[in-house]
Image (cartoon, rainbow, N blue to C red; front, side, top):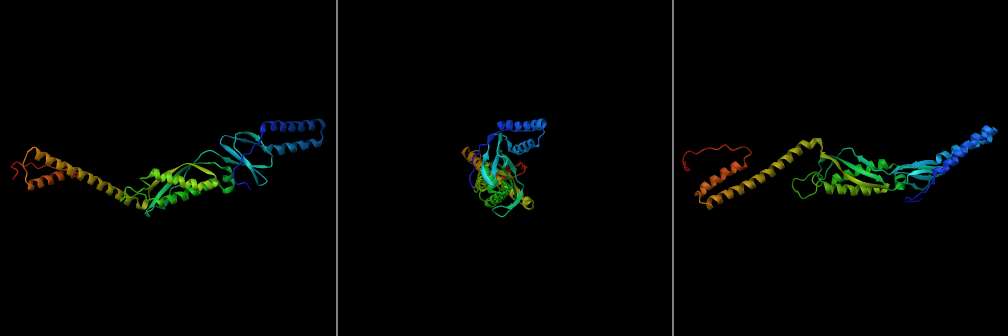
Length: 284
């Protein structure tokens, strides 16, 4: 059996339609004039020829099979007629949009996550779509589920220790690229072309979502505090240099330490500082 798609050129249906209508009119006229039963055979011929007509709409196709043998595929839109004994399987060439169900899988670190994929695909090879798989639409659904499970096991949902590592949450462009390549390889057996593939939904599973949210919040707080302390040190250093260069006040090491301590408390506190006014001298 042929293993690749081939082009089938059917006969135009308009000329054959005129011929079939002549047979029908001749059968009626013959019976009406002669009243002989032989003209009834023309009715049988008329109904035998009718199944040969078919229409191809834009971005549709028909796979032609004659007694179990593949004869080719018709992709040009129009009105045609072929041997009535041909089996004409319909195959859509239009783009399909598939939004998979959210599935629970484990990421690279073993954390349970919920993930789904959005896939845009279309049939590119009608022969493979009809003969190499049992049901190409079901095949797309099953392989998409398998691909997204493999993807989730390849990457971690998030990595709090190493910002340079690609994760499902932070490396969407790289992850979607890998997903598209994986689906392209899997669906090629069914003659399916992957137009676009990307993650549609991504979240921690319900049982660990609360704990992971607290971890993310803690990481964000620590990072923010680090920046605040870093900025506060720079401000204190600048203040001491300005005081020293302009000789505004002469501070010994003990008073510098006290000043640094007070400034750090004011600058790093998450609440507004309450000042205490010293009405005496600096020594009291």
